[in-house]
Image 1 (tube, helix red, strand yellow):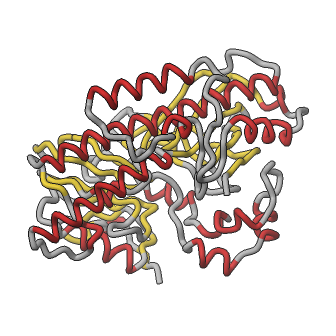
Image 2 (image 1 turned 30 degrees about the vertical axis):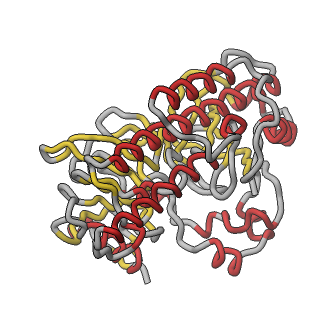
Image 3 (image 1 turned 180 degrees about the horizontal axis):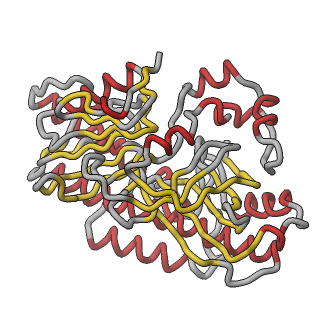
Amino acid sequence: MPQQLPKAQRRLSHKLINWASLLDDTTEQQAKQTARMPFIHPHIALMPDAHSGKGSAVGTVIPTLGAVIPAAVGVDIGCGMVGVQTHIHHRTIEHLPLSDLREMIEETIPLSPGNYNDHLTRFDFTAPRIHALEVHAHDNQVDLTHSPKWRNQLGSLGGGNHFIELCLDETDHVWLFLHSGSRGVGNKIAQKHIKIAQQLCAQWWIDLPSRDLAYLAEGTLEFSTYLRDLTWAQKFAFENRAEMMDRFVAVFTQWSGTDDVEVERINCHHNYTVKERHAGKDVWLTRKGAVDAHEGVRAMIPGSMGTRSYVVTGLGNRAGLCSAPHGAGRRFSRTEARRRFTADDLAARMGGIEYRHGDAWVDEIPDAYKDIDQVMNDARDLVRVDHTLRQILNVKGT
């Protein structure tokens, strides 16, 4: 059962600081296991939305010296959020059918795993993005032969907890909001290097607490190759979100009869690795389900279907490794959520929100996630909340 952790008891060990008020035993043990890896500096930070994952817990911020753990970065390299604040007030669009906008989005942005763009000439902003990614791959010797259709994946959503939403903030102004990552090409890159790390650790007779904590050592060819591929995948994820958001803006303006709607755009990763300086040393910082929360940095923290999301500014908390949660965090696995809940339960939780009804999204019901308001309360020393968003339209892949 989850245990209540008062604020005064955040430090679980000298290498692990916890920010979650609700923490199950499996997640805590995974975090302690990761914290015992010999290259951690100065400590691991466990975010308020932490839950068990593959090898290391989701919601873990992992600073490492001279090594990177590919499975800790995960298979959806660069997954994250993008949000656009508009100058449009709800009263401008409240008479328009949201179902029409949902159908336009579904026609413009490919949804679900394996669904890609069948042509790339519809929008004039697509080709320059693809060219920039091609140049980056060529100049950095990134091998993409495993994903010959990666260009068609740009501007596609995927499935699972990836989503597109139309939201209103506390002043009833409209925000466009979506969640996605590096799609199939990022998955192929991740799987390739996770396997290499596992093979090398076995070859070197390194005793690991979990095969998914296998690492690549800095100074090796395998490490430098992974960092090159990782950097490209993170760039692809960023541009994938930007591409989808540009398409979303295009269909929104067409549907609403408005123009030049964009006031601000925030595009942030929450599954990635970057070099940062912490506790006097340059480390490879892996945010596995966490956003950058350095002082003044803007980020987006989504809730689940039917709940609130947040636009935040980082407070630069050093104990939290200048990081913050990436969302609500799961309470139940997808299998358990499907055992507990039905499509009717989901419909009841989505009252007043335009979405595609059906069994396909039962495992995304808000009840399968932690309370986002509790998560944000736990994060009060990590970020400042600038806007609270409530959704009026939700689009998901299956």
